[in-house]
Length: 496
Image 1 (cartoon, one colour):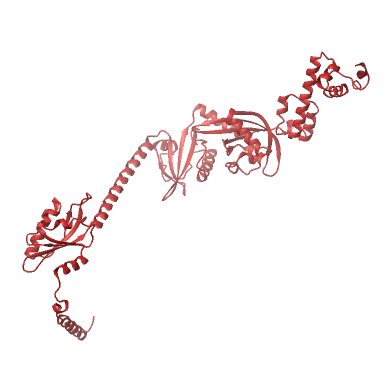
Image 2: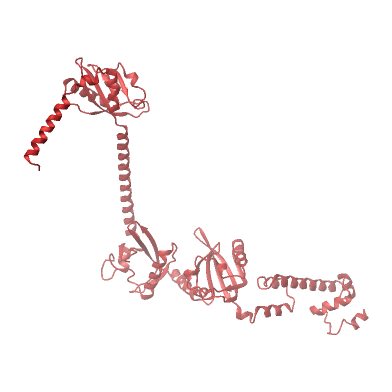
């Protein structure tokens, strides 16, 4: 607070300033201002100015924005102001004119002017009386931007309200569907593994001694193996959108169930949805079969039609030398199966065309460099809209015995049929296969010539375009004609 002396000094200074301002002659400074110029200057402060007579008839219109009145202002001249507004604004026009004539304080009122665009133009007006002739000046402010904001606000509020009711309806439907479901369903917090919500079936199935499930840590109510299965499924669900159903058994009663888990991200965190489905008699047998496949001595791999591994049993994990089934999933099968990538492509092509492949011989290569001769049988199955391929892979290294080179050399000592020859595709180089094919054709031709000539070897040699010496060499090579080891070089040739 200032001292009294300072306050007295400030008041004196303010009074002197006021006296100085009022000492100027405003009329002499502005001179004679033209009325039209004054109205135009007024339009700078407001958006539209109307010059009215005492009856409220428009004498002149001034606007800073030609689009405000759609260029209709020129047509208003000579009309009553009330004729330019909408019906609901008539009472406001009368009130503005009445207050201006009576000299009442200026009150701003919103009037709506009809527009050729079909949307009313809102303008806020105040009216003052000037001069002794009762001339009135109506000053208007454009409210279109405010009206647009208000309209967007109303639309946003309506949209929020609609979304709110839609959300309430969805929540109601979700709660009713969950409670009426005959399958036990739990909603679990992914961070703490506590049960957030459970339906009536889950409470009947897992609740112990009547204790509510909500707030308890999951998994619960399962035997040791089932607890490990569910824990593994929850871990898989965090990183994969596809999680197979697991087989679990309750701690009390020994009832068996399929359990499936799904991972959902939300703004506030993440949740697991866990569903328990009772096993039927055939489901139980199928579950046992799945476990048998997992521990089978032969490899079993499931892929999609592109050859990408979806699931594999423990034997395949062992032979392919990967750390776990999860490491194999998502990789193409040709990373391990086939001498080259062509083998798996051939298998997939035949599966798409015929649906199954039997006894395809190839090689399985481990990640650490080990390799084994294997025999592959495969089939395709359809599940919903998707198709999958199942590969049964058997190690035949012991059946073949010895090295591949020794086996092939032994097999080449005696000609074989064409069916046997095609089985060597993938195991024997093409050069060797072509040579053996030539031997088969050559033998068949000699047998046919001997049959046609009734074992007349001279005629058969002539038919084949060979010398008799060459024919005997080939016959001895293929074991035809029961020739003794020394026959064909001298005595047999001279006899012919």
